[in-house]
Image (cartoon, rainbow, N blue to C red; front, side, top):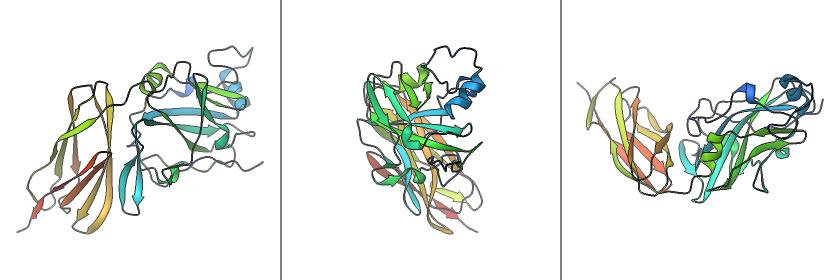
Length: 274
């Protein structure tokens, strides 16, 4: 059995590119064009023939990555967007990661393993996947494409297989770019030792299209000099505001640094001691 390459990640959880718009396993890969018939083969037979199954398909205008060993930030220029998908082996003959492509409107976008010099292994808050060596292994595929993208009849393809994107994913890919303003960010000025720290972020979409605000939250102070905390993904309709709420589990940290494409904001709280 030849060793196969799939993209892998180094951290666990689901966040920055979470909020999946993906299809279920029952809608996974077929060996023919999307929606076409494959004779008497069952879906399971089709998946085995194709060598891979796709699920957890997500669209994001930016991705959150480790930009240093102890902090996270966002990557992706205005006018770009990303599609992330989970791929699993269904037996021998599984394709390499560079054999997968996003195809739509006569255009083809190959899978990438680095964005702005940051390897996909640095993606933050993506469920950890094992390297694909054979049966029952899985990895992540990342596609970078223009925003907006005419995604009618879009599909992830590979030799012998195709996975049609559903209408929700296609609509996300087709959304124009927009801009955001951080209206409010912070929490209480003081907090008692051991209490949770509530943080509120309010974002206004100042453009004419619905959009997704993406950010990375880091912490500093207390027993930790600097460390990633969580990723932010917030859907904001055009011309409206939306609020994201988060609670840090204890009151041992004093600074919370929010990074996003257009800026950086720091919230500081004082931990009261007896």
